[in-house]
Amino acid sequence: MPSIKAAILGFGTVGEGVYRILQEKREEIKKSTGFTVEVVSILVKDKTKKRMSIQDVQITDDFRDILNNPEIDVVFEAIVGDEPAYTYLSEAIEKSCHIITANKKMFAKHGPALMKHAEFRSVQVGFEATTAGGVPIIRTVTNLLAGDRVKRIQGILNGTSNFILTKMREEGSSFSQALADAQQKGFAEADPSDDVTGMDAFRKLMILSSLAFGQQPDWEGVPVVGIDHLQTIDLIDASKENLRYRHVADIWLDERGKLQGTVGPVLIGENHPLFSIDGVDNAIIVDTEYLGSLTLVGPGAGMYPTGSAMIADLMHIIRRHEAVLIPN
Ligand SMILES: NC(=O)c1ccc[n+]([C@@H]2O[C@H](COP(=O)([O-])OP(=O)(O)OC[C@H]3O[C@@H](n4cnc5c(N)ncnc54)[C@H](OP(=O)(O)O)[C@@H]3O)[C@@H](O)[C@H]2O)c1
Image (tube, rainbow, N blue to C red):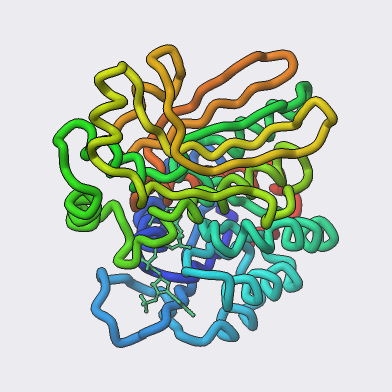
């Protein structure tokens, strides 16, 4: 049985999710692709940290151990921030490895360069997990673009903000109470500033913009507003009028064909597809020339939804590149 050797960079929520799914679905993957997928190396920052038990896998804090292993075909990346993630993935591509990333902060900025580099090296880049976690928006837009044209994408791209707004409206919680609850339930980061200031949604919107329109607007020209200035009374008053605040990231081509984007709280009525999206879910509306309007809804984060998006990328890569994945 041919085998694919994989490395995982980062073994936190997402990296562990990838590893678990690869173990749990080993037989199914073998059956559907004809390949076994074997994790051979895992990169972490702190090797002394207590982790789940892992057999026969190198745990390293030195990326060169991975880079210098000629057997590795695919690198999953689930570390945090621009660097060293971008450098590691560039180096992996240079060694002709396929890459699959969940790192939205890095990919919003460096995704176009990585895609170009990967094309040059004839390898694939999977980035489904960077945007809306388990919602297959990247694959959907990619498929739509084959015979259609995207005109606009708008969505709730940050589950933490949506959870906080829902809690403030339904339970009358203050912003800080709702945020504390999101943190206690593990929805928000220890530092939630990117979530509540809109920066996380902005970065995902830029990734979608590159994909759907082949370009990003000037970052400085996109107004980004978070939910951190909203008061509970604003949400309750809106609710009495049958309106809801949603934190919406929006990108569209204007009538002159210029790309416009905004990120911020928007008041919407009950006929809007985002009206009923409560809690930590993400939802994305894609407007196209021929299909019309399509809405995708689902979990935007978490170990298994995000890990499974990365495994779906792997399946896609295996099917497209069966010929170049050299059986070991
Ligand atoms: N959590 C989600 O639901 C979710 C959803 C979509 C996308 N993402 C994205 O996925 C990525 C991972 O998120 P996460 O929630 O899994 O983060 P996490 O739980 O904080 O895990 C991060 C992992 O990266 C490792 N790491 C950090 N800096 C490193 C470095 N310089 N060199 C080597 N390893 C390093 C850490 O090592 P140690 O274990 O030794 O500290 C840890 O294992 C992020 O970019 C995030 O934005 C997350």
